[in-house]
Image 1 (cartoon, rainbow, N blue to C red):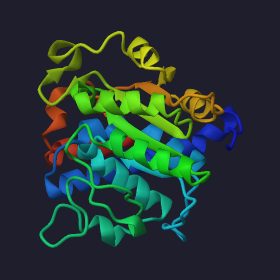
Image 2: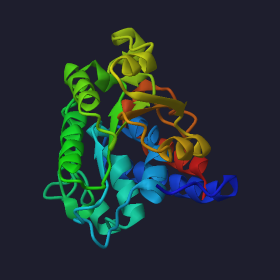
Image 3: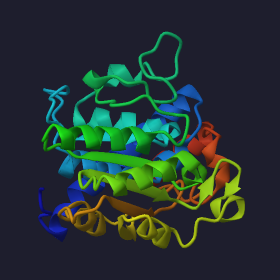
Amino acid sequence: MNKPKGADDFSRYERISRNIRKTILDTVHRTKSPHVGPSFSIVEALTALYFRFLRISPETPGDPERDRFILSKGHACPALYATLAERGFMTVEDLQKFAVNGGALEQHPNIDIGRGIELSTGSLGHGLSVGAGMALAAKAAAKRYRVYVMLGDGELNEGSVWEAVMFGAHHRLTNLVAIVDQNGAQALGDTKDILDLDPLGDKWRSFGWDVVEIDGHDFAQLFSALGLEACGRPRVIILRTIKGKGVSFMENELLWHYRPPDEIEYRLAMKELGP
């Protein structure tokens, strides 16, 4: 596993994150698509994964030894597509095919290994189960690849998630990493009001997982958590994040789960994101 180079290296990742947010914003504005808020909350985590930790290459996307990443919270696919484009798995032309008739990129991910999409997702609660199966297959075949699954905190309302949590612990899937985007909100309101998850870390611990809780927008903490060695148990990294992170009038506003920015909001948001 690669190790972080130090605080003086973070500026590169911050610049990549800004580029990804601008691509997300441009994509949802152009197509009048939803989910800019839950896309923005995972940008730093995706940047750390795709530009530091995942053993992948756009030149050999089907390498059987590659690490796998599954975006279980598939509605945040604008963030995944923007990250894959920044990493070289997709082109600008590919992004132009998002959310249009006959286009290659749908509003939830559709499996396309050549473009770096490992699994079709969107119906919440399935990603961790599939990821656990991939991790078990790797273990059975003595493969070195690791499986990372990004879930939303609202997604943890699904009982199938906790079945996969039990399965991962039972089979000691040390090559499985769950990443929970705990931005505190879901489609219809605050997560704590719909189905309170606290104490979230203790729940995962009680199921036999190693738990790391961090600021999901802090690269030092992301690098430290993602760089930890396996410890005999599957690991969950709980990210404390801000829905709509990066644009002041979008942060912690449920409206941006659904609504695309109009022209004035788009220009204001782009100005905030900077050059």
